[in-house]
Length: 386
Image (cartoon, rainbow, N blue to C red; front, side, top):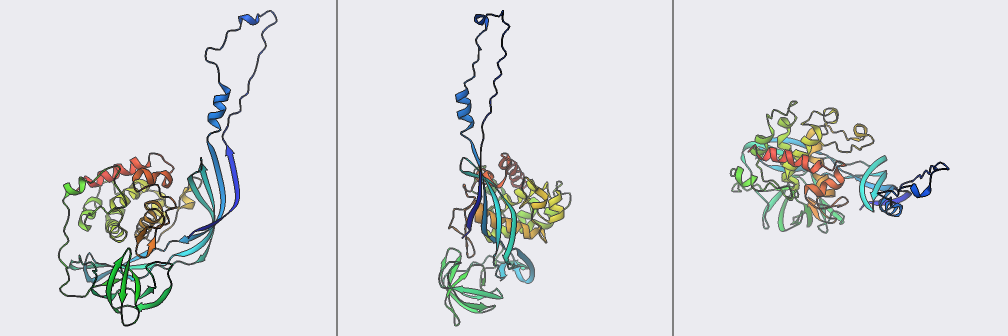
């Protein structure tokens, strides 16, 4: 849980300074001849209206998460469509000084002005199948499965903050006795407890590896709506993601052609609308042509602030790192209320939650009030390419 200590507070009340100048009439000018102002100024009303809006800036020292990044590795021995965790990702921590701006007690902007990493994050490693066939298998209660991660933490309760009671090694056989939000309850010869979803696989040769079913273009397009829930997957197949993102005339640098699949992987792992994610990337980066996108592999302008957009923007080793991270950030901070299980063993912070729609995300994610309309324009463009 984030902790913060207020170390300074600045309040600025917007007001009006009214300067009244009275120019005396010539001595021979009769007061009775001065005409009354046809539109008299109501000073009390003006002052009342302008003192109703209060801007507050708050300087705070916070202990914040440093979100881990995800590395993708291709595995030709896994069927196409397989996504399995090879290494657990672990968040780090940082001490950060932030400036928060409020209008009428509503948070409208937050900028980190200084930070110090106190615990380094550990990358998550995900294997993606490139072999023949498709893998649609989902773990079910009663299945015998195997650990895919190099090491896997076992916890006493289905909670990331629960006591760690042991560690399982890769290929350890376990039995799934229950499935709860983001967790498998397992028994094994080594440990019994709860493990994060995404780190188990089934090796049964009779498991369902059939070709993935696709929704038709008309079925997917019928869901498109400005007020739709972005907290739900688009249900585009990996082939459909490639269809709408690859070889587009706007994609001058082939950024989206070369990274189309990673929007699909983000959707599959975090249950976020991957087309929404791609539309944000297109809108923010100008189809991968912005300086931040080119220099920092950052398609979202993530970390950029109005006072210093380029300097504040995060740098990523690859575009896929940024795509994965933004999916998690949106799920954890913007699209779900605090305490909601969002992916794997993590829960929502809900700090910027106003609802799961474009308009709700726009309130804090972007200072541009027309941001939601711009993102929806590109969502519509992509949906209509099916």
